[in-house]
Image 1 (cartoon, rainbow, N blue to C red):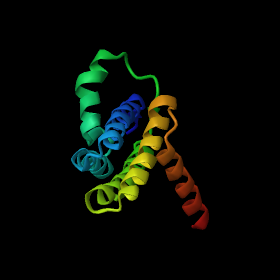
Image 2 (cartoon, rainbow, N blue to C red):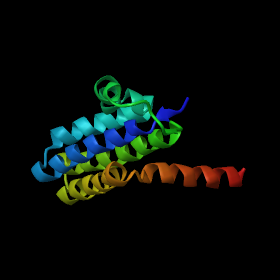
Image 3 (cartoon, one colour):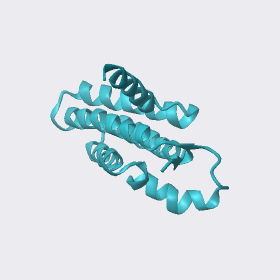
Length: 138
């Protein structure tokens, strides 16, 4: 079943703020929270992530009906990509080297910002490229 396209974009906006605060403060705890949010989104889909639940319960009821839908698989893949980068960042902040934390968190922030500000989901595009490559290989 397709999902309201505004939900992943809302989640990306919240993620952008969280990751920006992580870069400003260097908080491994806050990055651990974001890593958990990515893990839940990758495992259960964006609707089951904390930001997806917030969108569904607090934001969507205040909006008009959705006019744009998308397949759930690309945003779910994007959550998995975010999980990898947030996990690398967490390792960097918690155990070193610090540059790994900064670089991985910055990369995740850039991808989240692209989705939040412009509706361009980098992880979703990666998903489509992988799908095309695997379909042709079969």
